[in-house]
Amino acid sequence: MSEQASGAVSPPARGLPFRIAREGWPFIGVPLALGLVAIGLGWPFLAIPLLALAAFSTWFFRDPERPVPADPALVVAPADGKVVEVERLPDGRLRLAIFLSIFDVHVNRSPVAGRVVRVEHTPGRFLAAWKPETRDVNERNEVVLETERGPVRVLQVAGLVARRIVCRTTPGEPLGKGERFGMIRFGSRTELTLPPGARPAVRVGDTVRGGASVVARWEEPAP
Image (cartoon, rainbow, N blue to C red; front, side, top):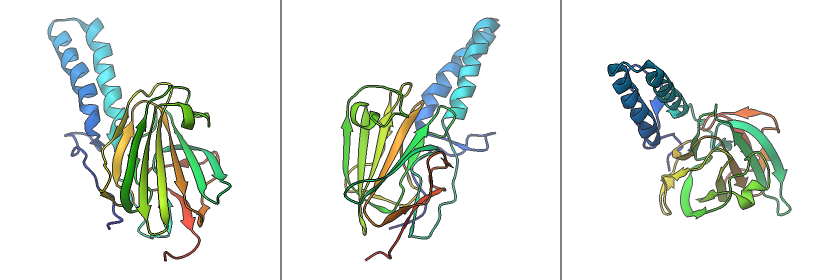
């Protein structure tokens, strides 16, 4: 199974130094088209906010390429943002949580190579996503990967502003380490739960980049 990043994304837009996540094009195209119409009608008071919205959406839905560490002993961040939780659970599993502000790239990436065995969406509330309790009460989507070391769980949690979780993968599909599998729109939380044997490589307060930053290491070689 490939450890290299891949995934269905739009090619780099002409004149832009980065790719745009395909979910972003309606948020870019509609205000851009309306803004151009407003310019043609001589309505700058309407054109300016519309074009500003199109520019913000272009920046928000950016999807840059990332260098993915090839070492299979390394686990990468499933999202960009700030680490807000690093916890060893009673059963020995390791849980890490990342908070994504509206200024972060919101594309989610697979932390390891594996096969998707479960995708489960749960409706819920939209509380501020930096709070730990949001994993149980907010709108969320769970993706579980089957790996050589045991099940790896990634939880996409909607936040106060985020109202839409996108998951592009389905059970039975393989994911390479660093591969894009979805995104959360406009501020959110992504959690990663690893089986026993994972050692954290980050602390609370660290800033990470999805697909590139190492967040954990396996203490023993894969069986």
